[in-house]
Length: 353
View 1 (cartoon, rainbow, N blue to C red):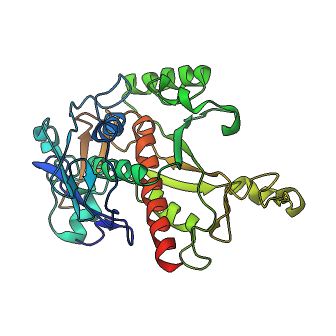
View 2 (view 1 turned 180 degrees about the horizontal axis):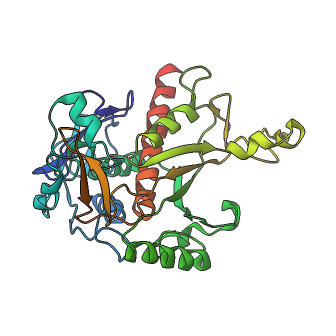
């Protein structure tokens, strides 16, 4: 199986399955001499882990990361950073009913047809549990990127949107509620909606907005390696993601150029930032901001028609422990992938200068 690595110089390779012994990763390219705060990494893991609130999957996993190499006496050595996250709460029998059939809108069918074999326990390698490895690597990347800030938050659940622009919110409020929406009134509505959906045995989607502050000018290349293209690839590689937009995004398609252009101040900053901090594929020193759309979780606690290995139509009942909405737990994953992209481009920029 190809496609298990992300990045050029700051490169993450992950391994493991949802219900295997452990997940893990190898992070190459991390500079030597970086002081690593292990507690900060575990805090990021706790933001993503299952079972953290009443509106997420109730699978109980401590998600404690164990570093095997690349860190000595609290500092990176410049060698490969190896780590594992042991699985401790597998309930593989929850998936025995899909051994010979395929869940609608999951990777089950295409996975088996492509590889001829499939770990049906929770989706195996295609499970979103793999993103735990990304959060570890992203937490390391954040410690490399001193001074650069990553702030992701839930901006919508279903048709409930946080109407405030990011400039008017306090990022300190993101972790003040279980849905990770920095506006308290909107958060309350989102939480109620997710609970209603869960009670009905259904799921719902939403969006995560991410703001990256203090990114230096000049990251990215103007042709195939545009900064926003790599951010888009990073976000679209996350399970359940259906869309990515940065800056004015799709709203910009409705505007006139005279309204959309970001006019310059004398110091090179711009009066507006509809470009989203990136012009011509290169960071311009303004805030980078983008939005990521997540679909409803495919596993619902209802009976649906599907097919088995012989092509017969069969009934399938949703079982197991699943998120009614992935968005709250996706917030740290979005930040992690953004940090991996910025770290990679920062190192590339130093190499080619």
